[in-house]
Length: 136
Image 1: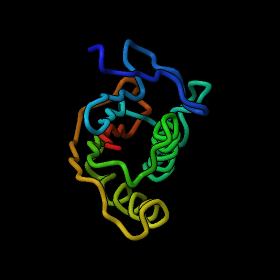
Image 2: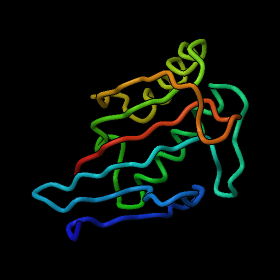
Image 3: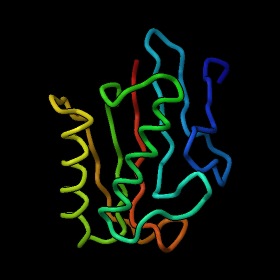
């Protein structure tokens, strides 16, 4: 693992609550970044929002902040994995993500994506978590 650089803090994002990094850079011909799952939790460790729309916006804000740690932009993101607790929240999640991507990636391309329905996350009030992979 000597070719990995890890970042465990990003301005405005809660510090990890377990042993993981928010962002990992692998120094190869191109750098690959593995972005730890982000939830709607602010830098103070408080859950942001009670609806899927509010929490989706907060998660994307956290992801943007984590990307900025090493100067990355959304155009560097190649893969997202989304974990949603309630199947009924998928339309609200998709609508909010579409609005956000219209600002972040107005001309595309969009990252590859997987969406999973899960029975729960680390805190019961959390409605979704998103992790990703970026290259630069």
